[in-house]
Length: 425
Ligand code: HEC
Ligand code: HEC
Image (cartoon, rainbow, N blue to C red; front, top):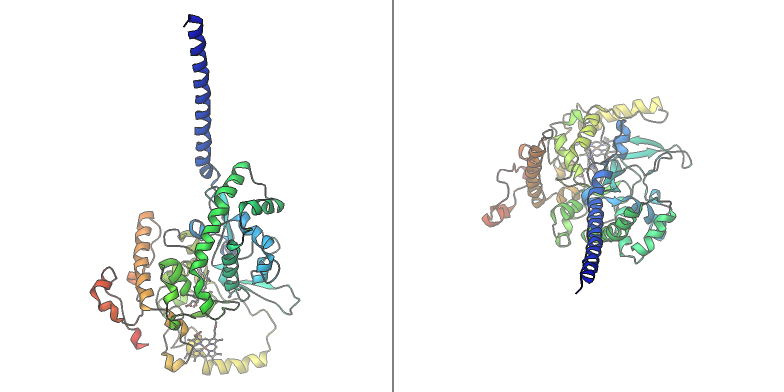
């Protein structure tokens, strides 16, 4: 080979290597951008100066486990209108304030580079009253979400992922038609990650809610407190649960004036005595012990501690009120006024005669699983140096003794000292 040919060859090899290097460097850069993107765009949950806005619209930490990418959540009612009773999420009873993007009870926050939608306490604890069917409803935070059909919402997000239109091919144009200004990288993320992953996650979640078919309908303002908890948090085989455990459906209560309740037998079944523990347990309907946002929840807790009940919004007929007051004092105050001797105490079912379904759904198995959750939670707290909470170890749990507790093999790993005086109830 002549010198000339040799030099041509090395020139060519050099050019090829240079190209390869350019391609390799570009690839590394693209990968780096993809990896760093979430970090540079991460803004975390939105912060609200006003506590009422915080309660209605801030995240309590559900992003990693139940966050739905914002544009998917937004486009679903447009793509699947026949799966809703009317127009949009409001047709399920969620309250849409005119100056807000999302209905009350839904939070928008940035997670891994995308905006996601999660639910918070206000899903179940903000309601409205109106004078006539045509009046503009007056929104009252911390009263029960009396219009919200949570079962309808669960069914909606369970049914839509099974539809063939829930695909990037159909959803991307619908999202863009809604005015989404996605950059090219976000489009790629939506197309190849967000849409398929959300679909899979919603299908997986739907498979845990099949028990709904066996239960009575919740109706607005009500939820089964514990079957979803058993299914989502502890992977109980809920399809095998006995009928007697299902249907523990309760009203959303009002949640003002929490301070005076500390130390009472709380929850509908009196299953614990710590307001903190109860707030955190409530949050676990939506978040997990590892991603619960304690700061967000403690801010709410501090507010609820002294928050007084809102004034009755209508004119009061003084004559009727004074007749009622006497009746109330004589027949109701013992259990319904803070200084009543029976307030915050469990009254035996035979005596009070209320529906036992809610009590029956709070089983020994659930209580002991919650107990282990409490342990993990306190450990998680110590690690993150957050404000300490009462975890179940310090909180009395009223449960009846179950025979299988005596089975050494099963009870291995289960907590030992559980105060077991539920038999007295
Ligand atoms: C999915 C609906 C739902 C969500 C979300 C929810 N709750 Fe509740 N909450 C309920 C229901 C139902 C009860 C009645 C509990 C029972 O069955 O014992 C309740 C009870 C309570 C009570 C006790 C009220 C009383 O006086 O008996 C407090 C306090 C409370 N919730 C606070 C919260 C806080 C704080 C959050 C958010 C971290 C929250 N809840 C999220 C449905 C919900
Ligand atoms: C012996 C105690 C006791 C007395 C007396 C009593 N209640 Fe109750 N009340 C309860 C308990 C416990 C509940 C919750 C039961 C349940 O939902 O299963 C309740 C629930 C209620 C509720 C439903 C609250 C909701 O958010 O769903 C109303 C309303 C109510 N009581 C009104 C009254 C009135 C009015 C009187 C007097 C005429 C009265 N109660 C007397 C113990 C009592």
